[in-house]
Amino acid sequence: MRIDRYAEGHFCWADLSSTDIEATLPFYHDVLGWDGQPRDMDDGFAYYMFSRDGDLVAGGGTLTDDARDAGVTPAWTPYANVADLDGAVQRAADAGAAVIAPPADVGDHGRMAYLADPEGAVFGLWQPGAHRGFERVNAPGACIWNELNTRDPEAAQRFYAALFGWAFRPATNDAPSPYWTIHIDKGHNEDGYNGGILQMTEEWGDIPSHWMTYFAVDDVHDAVQRVRDADGAVHHGPFDSRVGPLAVVADPQGAVFMMMNAPRR
Image (cartoon, rainbow, N blue to C red):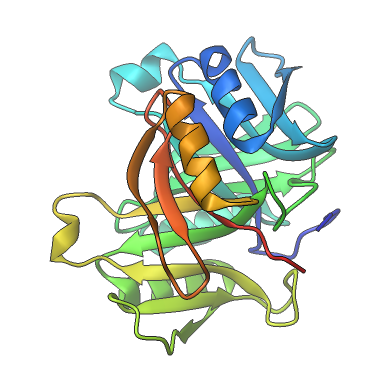
């Protein structure tokens, strides 16, 4: 599905923080079919835009020395669309979020901020300029879902409802952990789906709360083999779910993401 605009609070972008963005380009080309194009970010920061069949599907850059010294590790981060970045950051801070990177201009592309919710899950906010966000979603090689894994889903729902006005519906299946779907008034389908919330259980150990980005593939089983062939790691799966096979994988630098089959329609 091709997209050219996003509703308030809708996930509109995901980017990769890597220890070596150039070194990881072949992995994502082999696994997700991406091409990487370097972009001049005016401050000398090395950033790549990833595309699939000519459509932008994600971005990524190399962690700064300061970030590495602070203990930041490779990760994928989802960004939600906002019309008023400064106002959204203030609402988030008032609701208990930590502001990791305050509002800043990214050339004429737009404005961004980087936050951690009250449970520590990191996410971004994007106020679009010339760059609107994903040009393709819900298709092979594109983002298809974002999921918050948290030990306190009730507190998370209060926070994100105050920030974005999200609504939540409990899943009615027999999932091993409680699950809620996230909804907004205007989404990319008639139900306005915008991701999910999974309650973490004791089996998660000391893994902190986090957002997980999902990318769609033609066949999860084949994609898992491509991950292995490209020197990535397979942490879990493929395993069956009510939406089909899933897998938790990581690129060679350790950034974790999930893969699921793209819709057939």
